[in-house]
Image 1 (cartoon, rainbow, N blue to C red):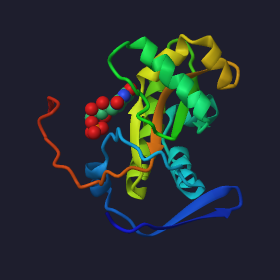
Image 2 (tube, rainbow, N blue to C red):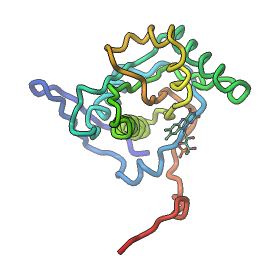
Image 3 (cartoon, protein in one colour):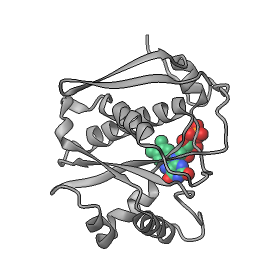
Image 4 (tube, rainbow, N blue to C red):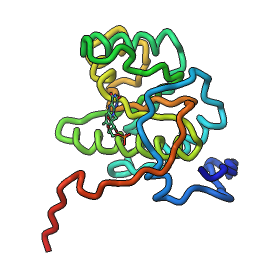
Length: 198
Ligand SMILES: Cc1cc2nc3c(=O)[nH]c(=O)nc-3n(C[C@H](O)[C@H](O)[C@H](O)COP(=O)(O)O)c2cc1C
């Protein structure tokens, strides 16, 4: 992986990111993978800052950024509670649905009836931007959905997230240091059928 030499600095309210050297876009895309083993070491403040920067750069429907909310969870008690909720939802399938990751970033949105698709799609964009940045930083990441489904039916855990009124969790990503490396993987071009209508 290309060494990261990245600077983030403030310019007024806006954050500007200057990269001297980065992986090529397709290199990052090919290297990204779901990581399911973590050392437990915390994500540094700097790494978090860069991952959140990538989140803020994501496209969302109608540029309605105020309809989205990010929650960074490193509290071990809360991570355990979310993991427990996920485990209860799909009994026996996964013993550690958060894989011991020390951080989860939850993307919540104000879901309006009839706009669910756009809100969930936008949340996925935000999560994927974070996953790509994590890959570039050499951090493990995995998009996590079903513990989120568990939170939705667990009012006490939902309460502990202190989400703004009317927001609900859509999707999340776990992040952490890993002993895994990130070789570029071949992409199978026939994984999904493609129908071209000319
Ligand atoms: C919306 C979404 C939800 C996912 N939820 C989970 C999850 O709860 N647990 C998990 O281990 N992986 C989860 N994944 C990861 C997928 O299983 C993974 O992306 C897929 O197997 C392809 O592997 P790769 O990410 O290594 O390319 C999720 C992925 C997406 C896009």
